Image (cartoon, rainbow over all chains, first blue to last red; front, side):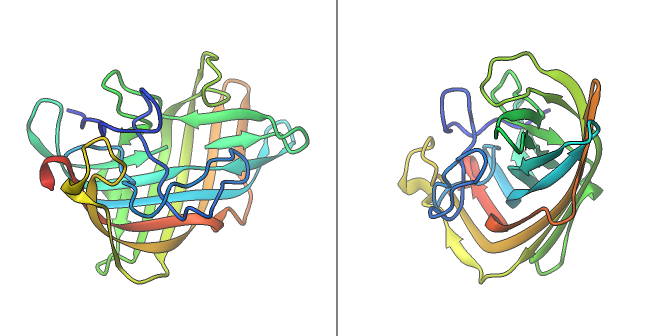
Length: 95
Length: 145
């Protein structure tokens, strides 16, 4: 059973925050990070490891072009309360 | 995972897991061994191979996505001291600070590949958070507060 989403978020239906140094604005999307006291996980009723990374770089496409690349990539591992109310353990990627 | 045209700056690919009906955002289960965390919690490696995603082309564009896959290899190395984060129950559950955690600022490097109908890509060396932000740590929210 999947976990539940955090109840808050950036906009209705967007249950995720942008944690990090508030002086940082991501160069391609223009996303401004919201501060250090901002929950990195997307999972409600969660206890465990969280990591977040906003990568920047380039990528080469099969069309031969060089693209600029930006990510919001996260991972979570720990205990959570699933949508059926049971307590579970899981590992997740946020891609 | 977003790709932008170098000339125009147009956002042309957005590979993501999508949103469940529950609202769970871009979050997918992976094998437990996909994420390795060092005993001191200051180094982590995520390896995911051929994860099923959609390419929604540009966030919020309203365009229909197309199925695709991505593979990721991501490393986090803590660079800063462990600090307390979050406001716990001092704020409402919809507040971004509605958690408690102990986190370290980190640097992260990564390698990516991805594909969808008629297009694939591979990241070039040097993809990192050196000019942006990464962090890692342990946290709890919701009923665990």
